Amino acid sequence: MGPALTESSLTSRISHRDTKGQGGGAMAPMILSDDLYGELEDLVLHTPLARERCRAQAVLWLAEGLPAEQITDTFQVSRQTVYNWAERFRQREGLDLRARLLDAPRSGRPPLISGIIDPLIEAAFAQDPRELGYQSTVWTAELLVHYLGQAHGIEASRKSVSLAITRLHLRWKRPRHQLASRPETWRQAKGG
Image (tube, rainbow, N blue to C red; front, side):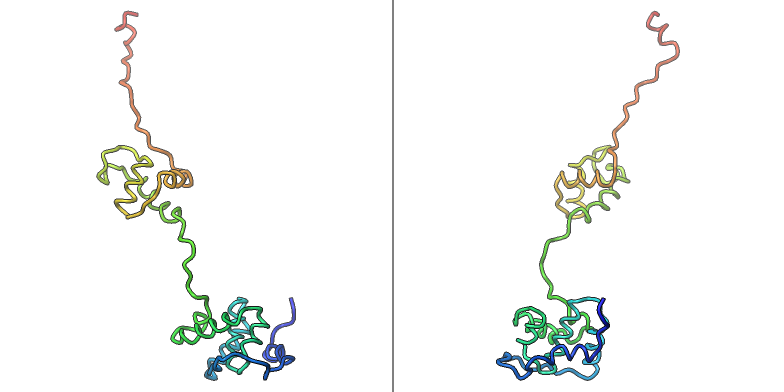
């Protein structure tokens, strides 16, 4: 690991650049209270999260009046990204400092159905289907699909339910047909 970061080393990283620079964007400098400025500096020095550190440092440099183009060169991001960081930081004024530096919410992939249906199937397997109003003595994949849809409003395929049963190491409850036990004298009854 490299040497520890200090306040002077953070600001000296940009001292080799021309702070009056060419251009610099039309962004108004951010105005930070002394307390907030100190909290941001502390966060830059102590957070292990690189994204959080970059965003906090960008906000500090914008507050110092550094042009957005110089910040984009330092962090290798677009100017729009720096503007987005600053705007989100301003919009989230009522939140704590770390929440103000987080990514914007994104849609992304929905959660896997396995995390949703596994506990429900396990709980259903512990009960007799007749207790839940079904006219069956055993659970089947089709019956569990129907149960998940009716009781929990979850649309799951038969394949997803079968995979969940395998993952949970559950065994199908098969009804045992017990033949009538033979009396000890059955051979005599047959004539033997």
